[in-house]
Image (cartoon, rainbow, N blue to C red):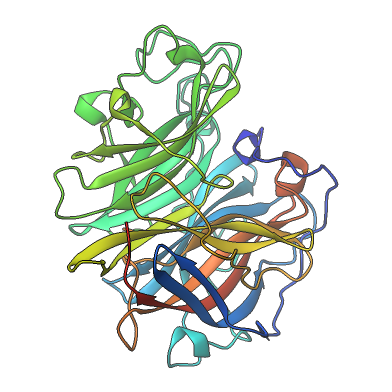
Length: 409
């Protein structure tokens, strides 16, 4: 297990013990508000739910890179996240699927924090495996050097047409085979790719997708001259119906270990994202976050799409959850004021996600028009480097967002 996926915006290397369950609910003292291109975005009822973990303490397990979904088929929230699983048969980074239980009744803002929020609990054993736990291929007799035999996590799941599409980043170590052609090996730096699985229930029975019948990642047409050294990392997925290319991937990439930034790729097929069609993005803070969208009134009449991206911001040296906004999905900013939502009381918040309808990115309305309740998650850790992430846990908060005004694109 290398934990290579955890490397992003390194903040130090001091390890910390996993936090115990936090049961007290904390509310932000003030209403949070910012203005982005004429739209006022206000957050009310900001609550800290707490750190959900088993109190395991040592670095045998860790949980991070959370992705949230409001599953319309079950009216429940789903949490997908990465983490280490260790037993007699396996030791590596895998993907976990859990239900988030709504307790206390009423709106999301009225949830209480004393009941268990996550099932199964974050305490896997050798006999009770978490739902959607995938053993690494090399642990069950496969070639340990094939392109998708290494660590895999960073889940992003979208439910469309009754199927769950789960995208994950897989680690291709230097010298291992890259995804296509299978006879080519990665160069001296990692050459990570994005993989796709589907499921009919979103929690188990996952099937790997072979795009065009080929065992490869979903991003194709990488240039032959440099594909051995291109690393695709921390993908962020949305689905925008009604367009000719509804599947949208944001992905950070490196060339021979050198950061190149985020790009956006649109596709009509979830298994095929054409690399030459990528569009450069700017202003996207941190890595491994989640994107959403909704339509708002536009100046001059009609509606326009407003995009949201949960990320982090500094609050007196403490990294807390925040949001960025975009009117075109390419250029991102924080608005007139940087929002600072409730986060973990002592640790920093990394690799954030928030609940959207079926994971598509569509914001779920509740109550009055342009009001959205959401549950959000982060990786609670001292820093985002390997030594800290190996001691991280999933942290949860909840909030209600309100939109007013007209967008001036």
